[in-house]
Image (cartoon, rainbow, N blue to C red; front, side, top):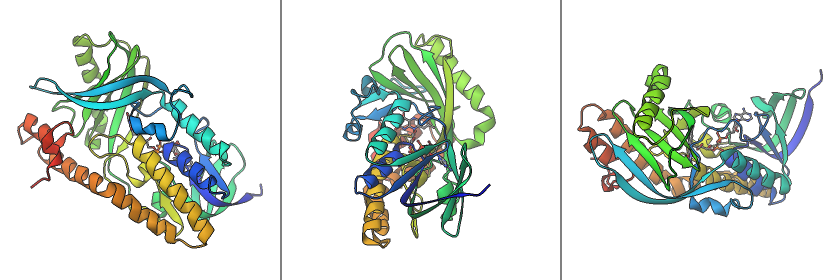
Length: 357
Ligand SMILES: Cc1cc2nc3c(=O)[nH]c(=O)nc-3n(C[C@H](O)[C@H](O)[C@H](O)COP(=O)(O)OP(=O)(O)OC[C@H]3O[C@@H](n4cnc5c(N)ncnc54)[C@H](O)[C@@H]3O)c2cc1C
C-alpha cells in the first residue's frame, strides 16, 4: 500500500499535558500543527496520582470542564518512627483523563489537527513515519516537538540515552472518611521513593514509587503499603482499579537538536524528589509551542536555542538541586539514620533547601 505523505509546520508527538499545550500555543500563533497520540483515547489509561498545584488554572478552567474533584489544603508527611509533619500545599485533586482530554480539545479549538491511535515510529531523512489504525503515514514537518513522555522516542532520535525513572504502581481504594490533605509515607522498604494516599472524594489513589532495582517486588511492596493503610483504618480492603507507570527522576535532559525540541517528561521536567510533573509539563509545553511557532515565522532555529536556554533558566536550578538530593538520599538510604536521611531530602523539611556538602 502506498504511504500517505503529509506536510506541517509543527509536528507534536504525544497528547499529554505537555504535547496538547505545545500544540495549542503553536497553533494560536497561526502555524499548521499536527498532534499525534498513540493511545486510542487521549488520557486513558490514567497514570497519575491526580494531585496538581493551583497555578494550573492558567491553562484550563477546572470547574467548567468537570476536571476538579476536590480541593486539598496541605500535605502530611509520615516517616517511620516520627509523628506527622504538615506542610501547607494548596492544590486540587482532579480527574486526570478529563484534564488531558480538555487540553487536547483546546488544542483542536486553536486549529490543531489531531490523530489518535497513531504512533510515531521512526525518522528517516527528516521525515517521521507513523503507524496506527490508518495506513502508515510519512510526515514532513519543519519543527518536531517530542512530548512523548518518560521513554521518549524523539529523545532517542536526538541521541539521548534512556533516562532515570522510578517505577510506580497505584490502586484506587474506598476511603473510610473524607480527607482535605494528601499523605506521603516514607518507609525503609519503599527504597528510593515513597508511598502516597491522595483523597479523591469517597475514594483515594494509593500508590508506591520505588527504585527500579526493586521492579520484581513492586506488587508485593504495593500490597504491604495497602495492608498498613487498611490496618490504620483509613481505607477499605478493596481495589477499585489499578494503574502505574514511570516517573522520570533524572532532571532535565538535552532538549534540543537541530529542528527537534522536547517538553514535559520527555525533557525530564518532572520533579526528581516529589514526582510531580503535570505543572512543569504545561509550562514547558507552552514555552515549546511558542518557540516552535516563532522558529517557523523566522525561518531559522534560533528560537529553539532560546527555548533551551529559557527552560534551563526557569527549571534547571530547582531540578538539579533535586537530582543532587535524590543521589544523596539513595546513597544514605541504609547507612544514615532513616529519619535524618528523609529530613535532609524531602521537601517538607528545611534541610531539603540546603545544598548537600
Ligand atoms: C503513577 C504516577 C503518579 C503520578 N502522580 C502525579 C501527580 O499526582 N501529580 C503530578 O503533577 N504528576 C504526577 N505524575 C507525573 C505526571 O503524570 C507526568 O509528569 C505528566 O504526565 C507529564 O506529562 P507529559 O505530557 O510530559 O507526558 P505524558 O502525560 O506521559 O504524555 C505523553 C503522551 O505521549 C504519548 N506517546 C508516547 N510515545 C508516543 C509515540 N511514539 N507516538 C505518539 N504518541 C506517543 C503517550 O501515549 C502519552 O499520551 C505521576 C506519574 C506516575 C507514573
